[in-house]
Image 1 (cartoon, rainbow, N blue to C red):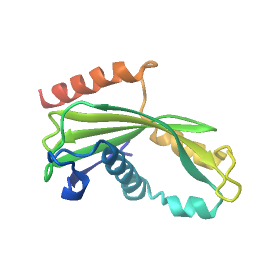
Image 2 (image 1 turned 90 degrees about the vertical axis):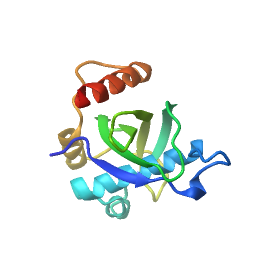
Image 3 (image 1 turned 60 degrees about the vertical axis):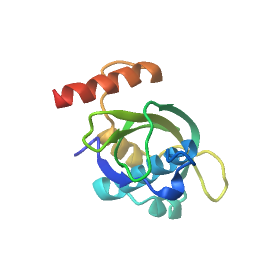
Image 4 (image 1 turned 30 degrees about the vertical axis):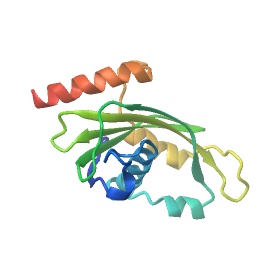
Length: 162
């Protein structure tokens, strides 16, 4: 099973500022659209089906690094992976790169908190979901912080093209 799916997106004019750069807030939209697409196409997981079962996720927080500008009409590749899963949180990493995947443009870590959409209160992931989550978790060799991960991701890209 592919633990690091990726998709290509073309940056839209309406998502850019007056200088033709992708607006900082729009990065999140591209990242979240990519993750939803990856869940559906690579894992057969449709968020709506979980919503109907009484589980949804809210964003607990973002850590984002804007490393290189992304410009209008540029094609970018977005990779996503689940870094950590527990009963009460998912930590997802999302990387945005140029189309030949030689340059890291942005890196995002998002914490997702499971909630019951009917009550709006936290709820734990059930055992079936946790089995799935553990099966797609990207293995970390050691605990790492966000800033260290930026450097590692850049080195990974360099070595993958080496």
